[in-house]
Image (tube, rainbow, N blue to C red; front, side, top):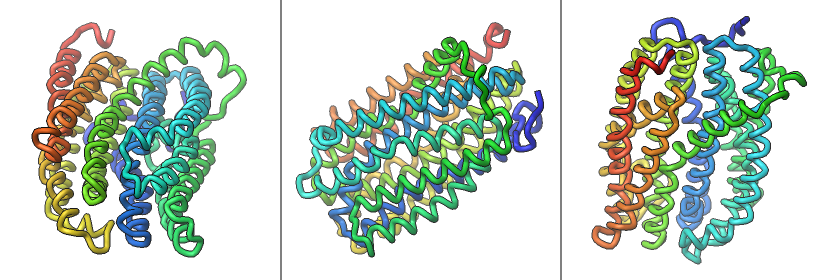
Length: 449
């Protein structure tokens, strides 16, 4: 099979350097993607005030949940493509691209309809305070209406990364992030579109990023040029893609499902709690996105090497990825703890002592446990990329149950602290299952036959 000059073969070379070279653009891309919501939040807080900030923040977990599921769903398609790439199966690669495209179109239609039809009910479920419910609905509905742009971008990006190109999505995210900030200011200040303007800026910027990534991807990768025969006999491939995609989507979003309960508890504490938790959770998302970037790197690395049957190289890569991931987590933990007050000031011009109280409590409890999130990200994704979906799914259920138990079960006893300890407990429970499973798989003589 001929390889594009842009394609990175992760089955050869030093694993540490290959992973880092692949991961850095993904990390930068995720950080720029975070700028979409950060720009919305910062500009809304600075120009429209704390009430509008709380409106955006009160529904942000719903939006984040949808985005995480989309990223995981299309990331699962990327794993399937990466396995065919590692096996040097060009016909299988084309079939994977065809199936991924068709399933993504159907998924977009279904998800957009469900999200928009349930928008009002979601506000009720989330116990949004009445003084911010109007703006919360406007922001959430518009962002969910643009779900197709998010699916489009993530599908193209995950395909390119599966082929070894993690730079192209980064380049266009940089451009579109700058555009997003410009459109935020344009729509909110002179056009006076309120929080709806911030939502439209996010959608338009992400859609443009997807278009540009597709154009360059078609130019650099001949395998993306599909023919009629690539759409024949797709049933078996569709089943595999759906199985992997939904499993990955659930894994990526299970944290958000638990956080829905967390957000509901916070919403019940009033606007100050929502504002403080919103600012803290935005900082916390930095760690999640960096760990998700390492998940993207190790998933493509393991998928290619699993397709090539290189067991020893997978073990070397997992060890290298753990070192890199935990180094990033240590730096983020220290930085967030030292800068927790300036972080709040990024979003609000004049934070109150009560807002600082809520943000400080969350960050000082959660940040020291980022190392557990790192372990979870690397081991779960490595197992999934070797076609074992059962253990990651079971770990997700453990994570979900522990997160909800900590939040709902303990909120009556320890109040807001239950929200703060929910994530570390969930990460610990999932790791307790996944780490032994990974090493048992590596000792199995049947895995690579």
